[in-house]
Length: 256
Image (cartoon, rainbow, N blue to C red; front, side, top):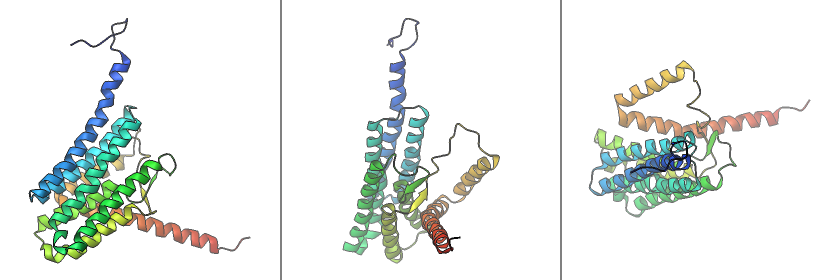
């Protein structure tokens, strides 16, 4: 098959652009598949694989946006498709996985906790879409849904890996699930890291920190990943408290 070429024998730029445009959407589809796969594996009782699939979806979700910006192939379709994929991978999948594994034994409270998380994920994504171009890009308004999903999936993975009794962890797991959901729809700011440009030079210590991060994760993935996203979840509250203290101190100082 031959592609249309111009008078100079080069491939049509518009056709080449369409080919690049498929790449971020293919990554979004892969993230959607990972979320769907997590649900299927949870239905089959393979909860560790479900948790790993949610983390895989998170990695793929981070790649599709980066690829779209680097190749300048952002589009309204891509943004909407990404949100629908996120709702499955980071909304429905984590809620169903933790319900099937831990919360089912709590009866109505168990499914209510899972639904609160799922509903908050939907609200978080809807608010994010309507606030594009309005909020400060350096920060997220509320915890991003991939981080919330990683927190819930990390708990599932950790419980399974340590063989913790599900009966003993049900109430704390329900509280953490509700906490993750409520934090998503809060007005608490979380650092986004979007100002980092991979095409620009970075300090050497940043590369060393990335290498150290990979080493720590490889040492004990369930515990390290859960700890990392738990710290990130708390970082927004710490940042809010520091800002509140600074504003309070500034307002209490006498005007010269």
